[in-house]
Structure formats: structure tokens, C-alpha cells
Image (cartoon, rainbow, N blue to C red; front, side):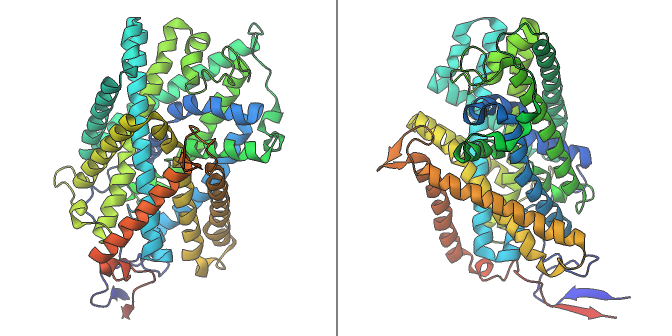
Length: 522
């Protein structure tokens, strides 16, 4: 029998069946075997918030690409699917809750890995604050619908009431996430089930009514809607693609709970792919149904109407579902935003936990609650950061808040593309082993990384123009560019500060770039 162990000082190292080490991956005290395949997939779907994404993205996407919206949704799915293969392969080799951070450090070293982790953390904080704001808005809209009182719905326009309610939502979501995976999983089954059920009813009724021929704006389905080459210009296509990529963001939450999942080497990767399939199916069916029912006109219920572009389902609820069932669509959007708000704490808290465990962040964030087995300190920190961020941005300027959301796409493409490249580089010595390894560990991740890097560069170029986003500018430069690049530079500054506080990590002594020296004994 052969025993393999690390030399003294190399850290705890685990060998997998292929003979390559798992690379100083450390146990962090999380609750193991808490989530199965279905639960993990539900977490991924919930984090994406499909109903919320659809109501806020259908209109703007139609505004960019017209009837080719379903094709753009498919095009946005492609790079995400390719990156999902990278996540699956990396998770099978290194199942660590730090995901992108841990894997990128192993592939490219501590500095690139730290910045990749920062990209994930700051993107998640932005999304959390936006989700809390959306949940608050729909909370008051729903109360207005139920009570029939416009004054109740108008409370959302009161800045103090809005921010106060938003902070309350953040506090509740933080508390649920703090109590660990068991509490999280139970809440998500109900909320995700509600979302998908309401979407199914909406799709069925929209198609039936559109085919009746009694609607002035409705249009017949055409297979040309699925042709991405039908988009009029490349600029319009990339703008629509950026919106589409945002709609898929969050599926990797399946991987951040890998240390708490049954069969942590394979189950999270399978759950991520399952979540992606459910999402693309939901998006395509809803896009086709809404387009058949409303058309792409700029008046009335047309999806191209700029007055309803930010909240399409609010405009379509009664026409499609009727007055009695229309309120369900408001409930579904609120449930979608609230569910995503709660599960989105999972990736940021576990990434911060991993970064702290490997000494890339202060050690206090590495504490795990002894009872709930959750990263309590990291979860609370994420909740506080989200609340402060949203409150400051809300009172500072509505335009700044909007432009911060627009800058989100830059962060997503940044850390996803780095992770995809990390996969191809990490497995570079195995690509000749088989056709399967060449494709899933090398070619597909590399293609996904290149596509997302291209979108990153194009978005960076477009952001320079003040017309991008809210239209505001700083010294003639678009404020979206200033915010996006500024947040990345802030990460760079924080990394330099941590480098002075934790030099061992940045020298590659804690989480190694290459395989530690191993000794084999008979």
C-alpha cells in the first residue's frame, strides 16, 4: 500500500485518484453534506433571480435587438455554459468554497487570485444592494395592489421609507444566511418553486391569448427570432449580450457551497449545469411568450415601450393573467428578489471565509459559527457592507446608484474570464490525456474566457462615453467607467495593504501556486 503525505510545513494535502494533490485546501468548519443535487441547483437558480431578471431586462434587450431577443438570450448562455464547464472541472479537482479565488491563486499566483476574489466580492455587494432595492420597490407595489391604495405604493418614492425598508430586508436576509445551509435551503425551495410556477402560468396564458388573434400588438412566432445574425449592428448585439450575461450571473453559487454539499467533488458541478439548463429554458420560453403577446412596439404594452422597460411584468400582469391572477406576478418578482437577496450572501460570505482562511484577508473573517456551521463574521460583514453601500449611494445620487449597477457587467466578465483561463492553465499538462480532457478542461473554458474578455473590453470602451448608463460624467468621462474602473483600482489598493499585513500569502507560502513537495512511502 502506498501512502502519500506532504513534507513537514507543506500543510494538509489530499491526493485525488489522478495522483495530483488538492493543493493545501483547508477544512473550514462548515457543515458538510447539508445540500444535495436538487438543493444545490435550487440555490443557483435562486441566486440568479430569474423573474426579477426577466422583468428588468426584457424591455432593455428588445430596445437593443428587437425581435432577436430570444437569440441574444441564447448567445449570452453560450459563454456562461463554457465557463460552467471550467467551474465543474476545477471543483472536481479542488472543491473549495473560495472557488474563483482559490482556483485562480493555484493557477496564476496570489495577486491575480486576490483580484479575482475581489471582483467576485464587489460584484456580489453591488447585486445585493440592487436586489434589496428591488425587493423594497415591489413590496410597496404589491401592498398598493392588494389595498388598492396608491398612497401606499407611493411610499417607495419616499427616500427615508425606501432605504429603511431596504435595510430591514438586508437584515432579515443576513439573519437567515447566518443560520446556515439548513435554514437557507428550506426557504429557497418554496421561493424558487413559486417563481417557476408563476412563470409557467404566465407563458401558457400569454401564448394562448397571443394565438387568439384578438390582440392588436401581438405577433406570430418565427424561427428567425433565434438567429443572432439577424441583429442589425454589432454594437447593438454586444449591448444586448451584456444584458444577457447579467441575466445568468449567480449560477456559480452552487459551487461556493461545495464544502457543504453531498459528493462535493461532482454534485456542485452537476447542479450548476442543471441550474443553467433550467434558466435558459425559462428565459427562452418567457421571451418568446412575451414577444408573441406584446410585440416589440414602443407604445402600450409593447416590449419596446421605454415607459415600462424597467418593469415589464408590472405592465403585463393584468393583460396576461387578469386582475385576479395578476397580483401573483408581483408576488413572484418580490419572491425572486427576496430569494436572491438571501442566497447571494452565500458566495460572498464563503469567498471572504476562504480568503481569510488562506490569510488573504484579516483572520477574524475565518470564524465559523459553532452551532450553525456558517461563516458568521463574514456574513454579517457582507450584510453591513451592503446596507452601508446602498444607503450612501441612495442619498448621494440616484444616477450614481444606477451607474453602479451598469458597472456590474464589468465585474462579472472580469472574474468569470479569469476563472475560465485559470482552468485551461491549471489543467494544461492533462489536455493530451483524452479528447474529453482537451475539450472540457482546455478548449471550452478557453473559448468562454476569450468571449467574456472580449465583452469586458468592449464594455470598458463603451463605458468611456457619458451616454452609457444614466448619462452623467466625471471630467468628460462616463461615470459608469469611473465607477467600474474605480472599484477595480480600490481592490488593487486593498490588495497592496493586505500584502504588507500578510506577506506569507503573497509570497505563495500559504496557498501554493504549484503542487507542494510530496513524499511517497511503501
